[in-house]
Every structure is written in structure tokens, then in C-alpha cells.
Image 1 (cartoon, rainbow, N blue to C red):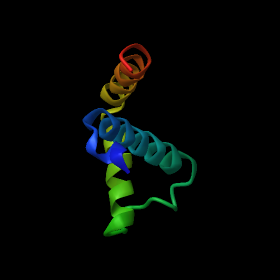
Image 2 (cartoon, rainbow, N blue to C red):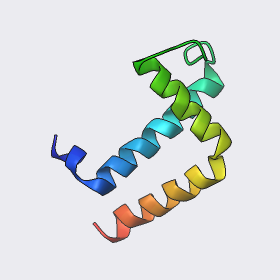
Image 3 (cartoon, helix red, strand yellow):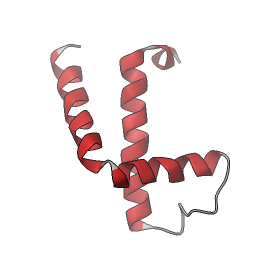
Length: 72
């Protein structure tokens, strides 16, 4: 519960959602399609961010992984 209030934990959770949504969209495109609204639309938007900004997202995943290993 308190992980929500920590900024670095929120960034890690957001990156995990983006990466997971992108992976699921690649494997099962019918689960995350463009006609969803509301909560499931959030996962579609996350998958689009993961597709279009994949070099940036992978770089951020690497940086956050190093941060978690070295700083914490």
C-alpha cells in the first residue's frame, strides 16, 4: 500500500504495466484492441506507448533496474 506513495516505486509499476501491456498486445492482440474504453483502455494506451517509444522504455527499464540494485 505504501509503495504507491514512493515515486520510484510508482515509476517501476508504470514501466511494468507498459512492458506487460505491450507484450500481451504482441501475443494476443484481441485482448487489447482499440475499441476498449475505461480501465481496459488504459492498457491499450500503455501498449501504444510501449510500441512507439520502445527504445526509451527499454532505456528507462535498464536505468530503474540499476537504480533498484545499486541505490536501494
